[in-house]
Length: 167
Ligand SMILES: [Zn+2]
Ligand SMILES: [Zn+2]
Ligand SMILES: [Zn+2]
Image (cartoon, rainbow, N blue to C red; front, side, top):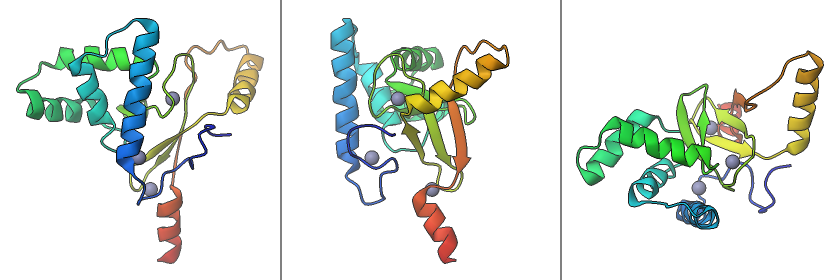
């Protein structure tokens, strides 16, 4: 369960986030290179803004940060960059929050399972093909044809859980 990089599902507060960000961006570069796509300056900037934390960020906040960096940016420009990043599995869209979060192991064809903390707002991605297979099996059993199958679970992350217990 989880990714094979040995990292915990939820990074602890003191972790070196610059490293998360650098790893994600080099992963995105590798994907673009292998697919002969361009990670333009704009796409990279959007990706960096999304990776400023593990909290999903909405398109409007991305637009604001980007405009602070480059001067006024038109919303469709941001939406196009987001479409690009989402369609290549570099960024995930969290439907329940209408927000975007970076993928820690970017790549095509993976369905995310997201654990979203309702207290601090952090989202962590699981990569559990067995869970997905079980879900799809029961869905098909109902005679339903799934198209997009992202699982989003809200709750408390380990740190917020610990804090709520300590109170
Ligand atoms: Zn991090
Ligand atoms: Zn992912
Ligand atoms: Zn939390």
